[in-house]
Image (cartoon, rainbow, N blue to C red; front, side, top):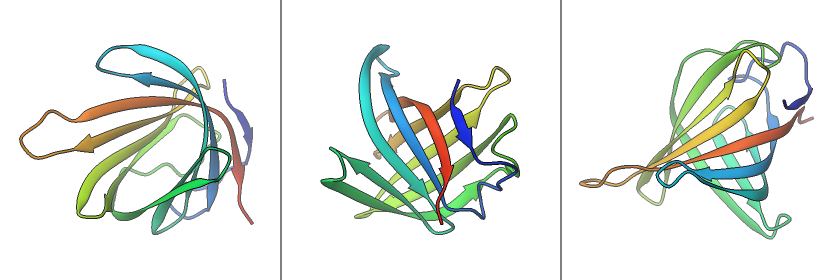
Length: 126
């Protein structure tokens, strides 16, 4: 279950910091420890890896769904673009309180690469 240091924050309107603690390759089901941070805002998703030494920014091209309170069960999908490559990130909180991010990299003519991250903490950015 993720630690949530936010209350009633609308995922589409707030700038949120999602701390990742584990990764699962959804094709192989191999899980591993993984530390990184995703920061979502109204127009982009920033992915910080390797203690912030590797930062990648994705433009949000569209949003599917509405999740008006991150402390409650819900889901929201960001359609993303970076360097003419498309991907999707779906942020979800299930009924048991677990928060995950599922990332799908879309490559024409190939099945999507899918990876899921467990979220250990969500905070509101100033």
